[in-house]
Length: 176
Length: 176
Ligand SMILES: [Zn+2]
Ligand SMILES: [Zn+2]
Image (cartoon, rainbow over all chains, first blue to last red; front, side):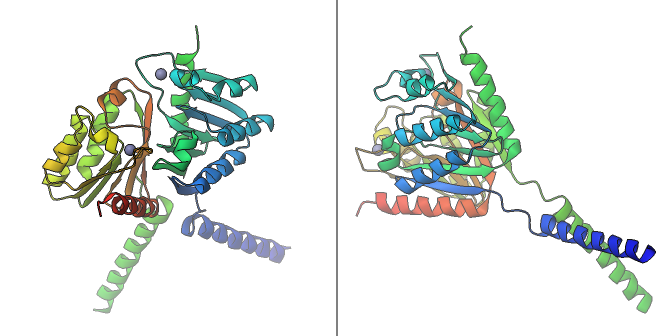
């Protein structure tokens, strides 16, 4: 019996050392990538990220007139992801704005109410751990014509800061 | 003599284990932070990052009309940092544009030449290892009124992708 216990302890130690090596020597690769525009492939890649959302999707973008991206947001909502969208008030009134469409699908949306300032952000936080931010607006022009960039970073701590900022914007835009 | 050598070996081993612990157990904190606007403190923080540039500063921003940020760029140039600036052509012609001021100080600048598209990026790469990107334009309005964000990430690999993209933009904007 003692021999079995020793063997068990040895196997445990071996597994422990292996796990230590895995975690310390070769940290799990964190999701991180750069997307550049104009490039329809970058739009496709952004859609793949949105389609990965499993629990929560916070979208904070100046405007949405790109139907591919609008559809990715509604797909997330339809599969049970908790989606919230913040956008700019002026853009809300633009021709082709998809914010009303998203709202009509039952997705909670808020827009800023200050005519002298822009809700100019363009970021997304996925499942409290992946941040996507940059210059890229959710328009067709930004995909096909403009020079734009997005960076994707896996960083729960940074995401928490963005979520707090998002929650504060949400509260401040909410009609009293 | 042998005792001294043993002591020396032991001291070396001790130092080695300590270094291992430092590197593996507590990896050096990577520079990473989130900046949110409107907030003059976030502008100050961005200026601190620009002032840290020691070798190379790539600035790729839609427009520069914020003199605090303009001055941080020219300070980098004055202390010997290799600075390059890309901006948008329409913004170049705007009242208060600091691109001509920067060019007159001897800093290499390029602007896009396509009237149907915007060089809409707002990113900076510092010393090939720190990327700062987000929605934030280099204006006074973006500091004091707009809702904007920037993320700072220490990531030489991602920076290399941004540098390659920057170099390609630079080449494509250069008059033939
Ligand atoms: Zn607004
Ligand atoms: Zn342009």
